Image (tube, rainbow, N blue to C red):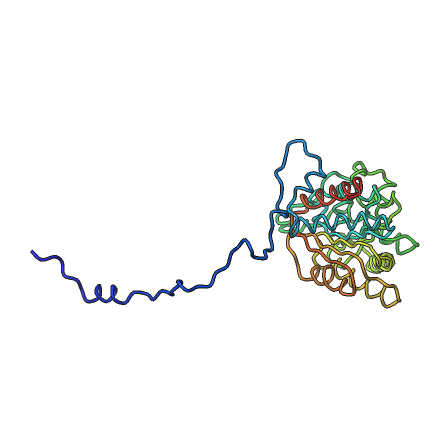
Length: 332
């Protein structure tokens, strides 16, 4: 009895196999003699219970962002030894992730000499100082038109703009002063009040129409503009002193602060200040175009270093702060 017939198609598939390349004459070399980018000397080390922070930092792999994080921390410590500015810029999410007290601690210890933010960061910081809570449910409150309509928040910030515009105080300075004057219940954790008490600048850089306080009848465009422009001039004065070892760190501001910084740098250089040979860094959960070019790349083309470190604020900011404190303590 004969077996099953083999079709012409089956015969063809056996004959027409895919062609394979012949590897028998490939040129090879020994990995042991090859120049390589990664070595065992760069690898991380096992973590141990009870280890000191200095040991933890040295246990991190000496590559990529771990190395850059440590470089930024050392740059901050070096800047303060040289009595150079450390300018920290940030957006609203930094406050909402609970990092205001961490930055306030760095400022109190002398590692930050100038704080600068958009309007949202100051609003969230102010609400936390006064009420112990912030960040409304936008989706539900937008539906009924109540989003952003907190009159008490708007009154303080808008009055601060008017007071700053009418006198010689900065916008951020007055917000901090008002919180201190009213003895806000949660004042100790407030970054903007901390800056006021330490007598270091907290400059407030507002885009009109972007903040909830602009929705209120208490808002004055003239006052907001005048107050914010004064803070820009204060900001530019700090930028003019960065040359020769200063540090600029942008955290979580994708548009406003990188643009403000670039314009202030242009002003300083236009006026003849030698703003070069300094360090810049951008810390954010996602790396955006403007921080990349306006903070990390363009400003240090004439001399200096720029770093971009990606990660969540609630992890990266405390880690950076801890590294700064440790390097200042150990001198390494």
